[in-house]
Image 1 (cartoon, one colour):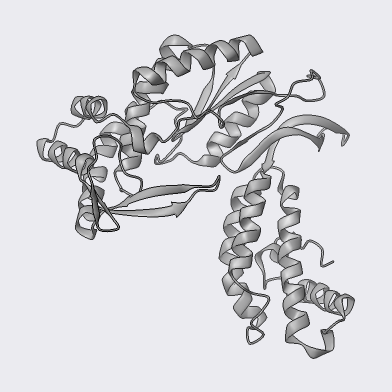
Image 2 (cartoon, one colour):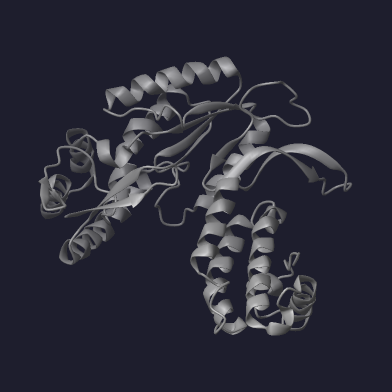
Amino acid sequence: MLAVSIPKKSGGQRILGVPTVSDRIAQMVVKQLIEPDLDPIFLPDSYGYRPRKSALDAVGATRERCWKYDWVLEFDIKGLFDNIDHGLLLRAVRKHVKYKWALLYIERWLTAPMEQGGNRIERTRGTPQGGVISPILSNLFLHYTFDLWMRRAHPDLPWCRYADDGLVHCRTAQEAEALKAELQVRLAECRLELHPTKTKIVYCKDGKRKGMYPNVGFDFLGYGFRPRLVRSSRNGELFCSFTPAVSSSALKAMRAAIRDLNIRQPTQLSLADIARKLNPLLSGWIEYYGRYAPSALSPMLRYVNLTLLRWAMRKFKRFKAHKIRASHFLQRLARDKMSLFVHWRIGMTGTFA
């Protein structure tokens, strides 16, 4: 297994364990074999890496619960994929996987050494990120570590988990603090720990909940949950609601992805060429982040349009040093050829200045 370092969004490096092609195929075979037996035992509020479950389902459930509960314990498990205890995991695997040959392969994959820079790294814990079978194994581990524990110890508190990121909704700050302490103990029993900086207690502040607390927002699955002005669907009036919209970090990542396409510089590109590069990205972003508060995507769409503006000023001599003229040209294009770009097509044209 090859160890490959990739940058984390929060800084630092994440080590992926990339299996060989033959191992990848074999892991897919085993995953498809065991998933129909394992998935039905998972609880409804476990959303990560499951068929017929999505991150948007988790965001929607969290949105409604934040309206009903005043406090949220947001938690992250530190280095989950690197620290899963093999003994505990295999105990769970043996309970549910009845095929001896599959058990043998799973154990071999868990303990397979990684190679990095010519060095051989022995592994005694963890299930490598990059492995096809790792997500379902980590879900099984957390099913016993967290999900069933919550149902047994706190059946009255709703929760949501997507892989190693989770939320528990609480009625009071004291309840959230007590739960955090209990969860630390529970994870320690299972050889895991909470991430010290990514775990926090949040107050769901809105127009009716007006308490003053240091944390009144959190990010979950690319959405930022915080107090926002929204318009009532009944009477059209504005009011303050604790609700999700695309997070600032997600917007920053989108702008970086657009920059990486290097659209502004090459003047040999046509608008159709640029559309072929941009539209797949825009379609995915609008479909996912446009579900809740689509207007929050406006800064990204404006950045797209400004990128097109810079391209036009380089491409056409008549627009060089004539930003307003180039802007008018693109506005006419967005009106007359709205099918060219995804956001033009669905009416999210945005601004060009």
